[in-house]
Amino acid sequence: MYRILSLTLLAGLTGMVLAEDKKEGEPLNVPPKGFTALFNGKDLDGWQICIELPKRTKLKAKGDGSYEAAVKAANEKHMKQWTVKDGVLHYTGKGFSLQTIKDYGDIELLLDWKIAEQGDSGLYLRGQPQVQIWDSWKAKGAGGKHRDTGSGGLYNNPDGKGVIPLKNADKPVGQWNTFRILMKGDVVTVYNNGELVVDKIPLANYWEKGRPLPATGPIELQHHGDPLWFRNIFVRELKD
Image (cartoon, rainbow, N blue to C red):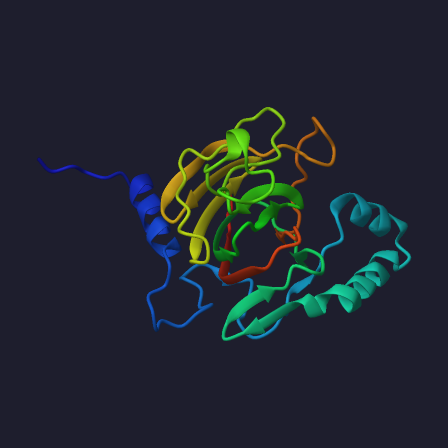
């Protein structure tokens, strides 16, 4: 029996194909059609050391250059811990989080990540924690209900929705994984290595509990004291 796939399903399948690891020998950090590369594979153009959302809002409100001065000081202190080699962004685990200079609202995000044994990290969307990245077998805090659950969950949601991924789709620690993340309004869907792990769950406002998310904010690669590797970071801004 022939089945007719809807355009919506076809689009979803296409997105999952785009999100799969590039084959050996294919060029890194070259965005699929319709996407923009957030990481160019050569340097940290477009990135800065993180100024967390509450502090950023306060400093920007002053309008006296305080925010720009804080960014400069943070970059001088911590940026050296983020290095680029052979098209891969590497973090030593000894500095602070990295975030995009530009703010983003509704997006589709593709990203390859790798973490060391016992490692812990995450992605902030609109400056909000977080889509979880970790070794859920051995990381500190990975016991109890979180043990062996894998990455991709909305770890900080206070109501528990989306905190535990629908399945553990992580590859063995030390291998590359690929996220495909869709964010529309406050609703987040996460695929890990092509598997659905979070299905249309609102991301909570971490900094202002109970309030709506800001319309835009930076994308952040989270420091949690552990070495990290990223590549193929692509974004597509979604329009109404």
